[in-house]
Image (cartoon, rainbow, N blue to C red; front, side, top):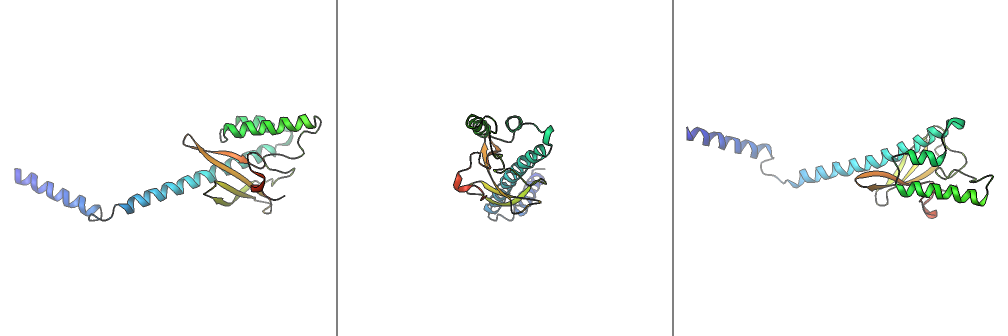
Length: 172
């Protein structure tokens, strides 16, 4: 009976040893898992940025039925608190300076006009988390979006002129 248990244990140990790559380098698995996590995080940043800006375009395309910029941003759970605060500050400051006109351009798209069919990714700088998106129907129209990680979530922290340094903004 004991011999049978020992044989089963030996066979099980050998099987486990063989199925784990015969004791090979386990760093390959760790590296593979790490690379998958990095790719997954990269994909999250891209998805958040595109969901945010294309949702904004969808709202803007509603014209008279669109909700205002501040209201739309505040109702959006894809942005940081700092982004929401900065959008309100920019708009409030513009109306202080010119109560009739306010802003002469949309701060989120950094222009008066925008690609009406939305945006797609052009590039992502993983060092700075700045994405460059381009118009689907206007590829020359570029926009910079910054995504950060807060409390384990990827969120938009900058877009257009909002929280994007002047030297990083798309040329207009």
